Length: 599
Image (cartoon, rainbow, N blue to C red):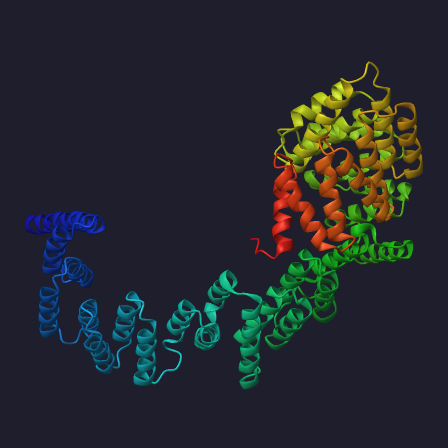
């Protein structure tokens, strides 16, 4: 037992000592001390017979231009280990370093000619060529291995990588797809590899080759999956969905694949395709599908986004959507499980159809549900408070905001309620208290709340200290509240009164900014653009300049469909207003519009 113990200890000490020597040898080699490195690598190889140490030893000799000795060492090893044909590559490299190119080429060809039908030896020889960046010879090695082993797919992935390194995309794709046929589980790795380096033309080539594969075998599931993925990369969700539905039917799946793809389409604002995917699950899979309820819910939500985003809708559209909500709740009932849908319905009624009475009634019903999730309850109360505020029920609104603030003091929902309560005080002209709350909320974990709080805090400080009377600021905050209440004409009247009573006031850029927001809500985009441009041209140093730039860029991107103008405005924000709270988002949107791959 003691003998075994001492043997183990001796072995461990030897391993540690060899590791230290290997690190020292590598340090010598990296520092260009090749003589010292060569001596250590020779000793390490004698002790371990590790090919890496032998190659490093030879490299050290070559660095010292001891070509004769390097040749002798390799020839001796070949005599001892004739089966290690990768040594012939090492020998060829020695000859090539002496400019004996013909002899070197012969050594390389002899190595390939001597290749046995052994998968491990094929890979080992190909790797030897690859380390010398001799990709053609590595390819030749794998092709010889395919013939010897009579297996087209066995080295297809290796060949794909080699053609990728050579930049030969069609051959790379061809070999990767061949490897996929024999190893479908590798599809995710291949997709990640393609995504890192492919251009639009590369995706086109991949699509063509996939079609060829599917002509050979229409039921090749990995090829259909890859084709669907290609369509997603090209944002062709209609065709991607067609492939996903085909796979769902062929494999008798539960709709999960289609559901996931519909979510991707929805996130990319391809609303019609997303709805088509969700409706497929509802209509084809039916109520027995585990995705049935979620698909119905998401279809309704995407339809709502399609109608209301960008304010591009008619009252007829809104009424049709209202009917869809009612139909949904008739099927699934009004209860805590459907509370979020009811809240969306209330938002539709309150902010778009302008039926505040119905919106308030829906939310009061939600709040009364027994066992309702506390977070959902808080969201419902905030929404209800907003609608009370629109109805001028100030006390009811502040009471609800305060309840949520108290119940969720340290989380984002509580910060939102506190911000809205502070803004209510701002609407009412209590600027000192509102500004104190905004100062605290600048540290909120919610970036949106923190930015909005900072914006209003700076705005109050900027305008409150300039006049002996806060009358102009009070009038402006009242106009701001009228906008929130969708009382646009009254807001315009109030804003015009400010400029009549206080000409050339510091609020002039803010008045233009609020008018621009109103015009955008009214879908009068030309007038909105006019207001934003006036701020940018006349007040480039004022606090609304970066806001105006960002909102104007957003208009050009999402409503006016002038992406080049949007891109230029986003660029101006992060170049000229680098300290702006919009700078990071502007840079991100600029890169997306430029076509960068943003992860």
